[in-house]
Length: 121
Image (tube, rainbow, N blue to C red; front, side, top):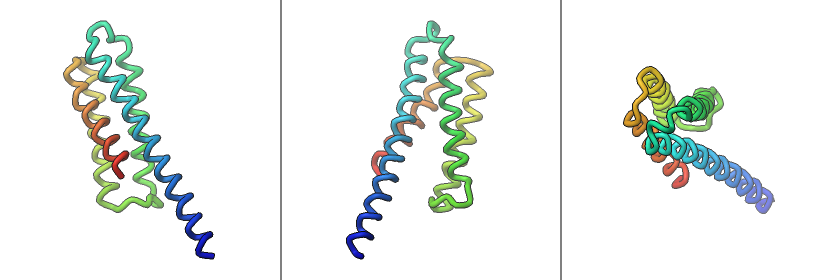
């Protein structure tokens, strides 16, 4: 019986770890896309809206996940992620309203920091 419990725990840990790795990889992909646009501005302008849309969808999924009643995350972590999601949405709107490459820096930095945190968990 102990062996089965250990196996179940390991399987759950693997799913959680792979989920975090996947989230981290997606955040890094979004950050890389935004960084490329910033670095190649203004030639990259046509890629701006699709890159922002990808990033916004990613953060919308995070927001939906942390605000579910059955989220396993502690309340303060859920609240912090939800607040980050709101910030990301507002920053995305600002970039769309007045596109400038330097406005992408905060989105790139946040994605990289959160991705790094997910890999370190």
